[in-house]
Amino acid sequence: MQSFVLKIQNNIRGNECMIIKKTMNTTVQKLHDFILEMVVQDIRNTSNEQSCQTINTSDIKEGFTYTKSILNKTGKQGSVKTRIETLKPGQYQVSFTSANGVNTVQYSYNQSSEDDIELVYEEHFESDAKLKNMNHAFMSTLYKRSNRRRINALLNQIEQLVNEQPV
Image 1: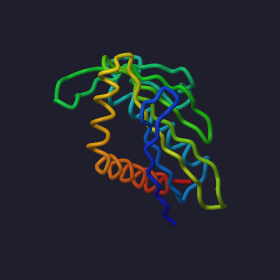
Image 2: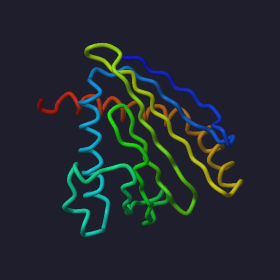
Image 3: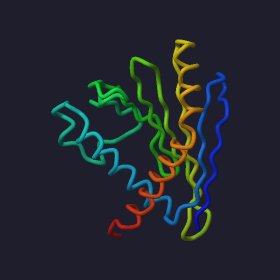
Image 4: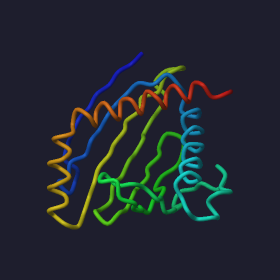
């Protein structure tokens, strides 16, 4: 059973927020365990901090912070401070702070039937600079279709990988 809804709305501060709702064939606990593993792999793959190479799922808690080395949209090396805001079965929220502002991603999910969950994916960007907020809103409008495809493909891949994990 697949359902997919994309909505762009303004958050409290007037900035655009992308919201995607999707029914996934998995359980809350399976998705939570997968998110923990995904976070550990992200830390190991993107952090230059030596202490992060031995990290385990038991080390990941709300408030955990690490710095990711990434390539920006123009291909230049950059870094973002990554902070796990919320991490519990049914909800995962992470913020990425860069020189441009703060991008926040949240997964909220609950069991809708024995085999399915209803997942809500939210993504929003905020900056202290009004021009950066306006630029992000403009670019989001331009890339609305590709963003929808990108997030839908990501959620489909997550669902597939969760269901491939050994029980």
